[in-house]
Length: 269
Image (cartoon, rainbow, N blue to C red; front, side, top):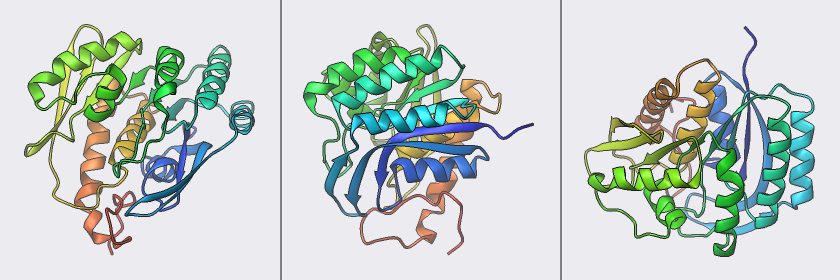
């Protein structure tokens, strides 16, 4: 069997913990081949994002067309997009390529950094929802991102997750995975909704300061697992196991002086 090919469309994290870098490390760890389309360059480390440079939309298009015209892409993960113009280009080109080859599309709404830096202007949020969500098979917002997407306050309890997951389905993706990692508690619960049924996923909360890129890694791992023929539920289960172990081993790395990355390759430092 040929190795599946997965493409990440996201921003570059110069510290290597999130974005394109985290996605490619995750793809390798999950034994799929990773291609990439860079939408944004960031100057960041484990403490802060100090500068952002959106890649011109025409060059994003060139990267995407180059990859899809040559490779049998079986799944795509979109992270940070950077600008409204890039949203338009991605929507147009992904719709074009979806008509020519079948691939699973995960949309991970990376709207701002954990440090508070905004990655997509408020004026472009509606465009983002209107153009990209209908193309997505799965969206994977955390509770902070869900609040922005819905124009609601951030939820504070697991009991509120059911209602918000159902509201997110109104954005027209096929499946919604609402991530509850920002809620308090000894376990991290995520909730999958398909328009009819709700399925919960739980994993023990790992105590570590080195959790930078957790959301990127989870969505990348799910996307990778889908290409192996797993069901969506099975893919999420495997992805959560991988992320939990990468968090458990994160403190074996010593990267920077702030919030460091997960241990994607399970290195024993």
